[in-house]
Image (cartoon, rainbow, N blue to C red; front, side, top):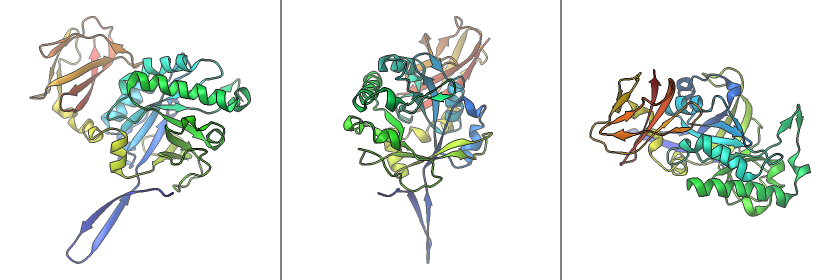
Length: 318
């Protein structure tokens, strides 16, 4: 197995030069603090997963900021959930994830991910392989996957290392594999259990990326940029931030109604989210939305047009 990289061939009259580019990304959580996503993008990183939730109650406090700011920097974003089978049913974990992250699942986003690794309690690692048989742990993970796919229509990926890849049974190998092997090497991972192939490899836990203070996890996609676009269902990866200039919302800040102007395009879907990712009920009529009932603060407006374009705008309610 080998990593396929996208190559761009430029021909000149006498010589030809081939430029090859890996599809690289990062994964983040509140541990990275405030991130300058424009710098991340400029440093050559195409995609990023952000931690959204853990267990049945926890929400990462930086999740929505990471998602919205990453999208506005034209980074392809996705959400991951840290599994807690030691405390909860898969349905309870899935409900928390979907309640927070559902706005960021669909075409133009990375697939949702179940992060299955050793949780910690009191500074001590909880070995799930000691708590559950292979069949029990595999069943828990599969039920989470089924619940998320049923609710969203998108097949999740699973994030695991070699220990878990070889402990889980083959019922999970129909789901895409994001494999943790921080060997500081872009070569294909080894010891991936019953999976025949992998889609993403986390190859470092100690990466240095512009716009991020301290270490950050680094990842590589196994495929071409065309393969990557297929994974995220799109062309919307190239549509988002560049087209934000095409949408005009006013007045912003607002205390009441806000007008939305996107030229000749027709709006298919519109949603307003608070900083925790929760969808706010909105009334959209005659080109405007009523924000008068919202509490003062920051909100995020998501617009999808009938031709598939996506727009993201920050809204300030006063």
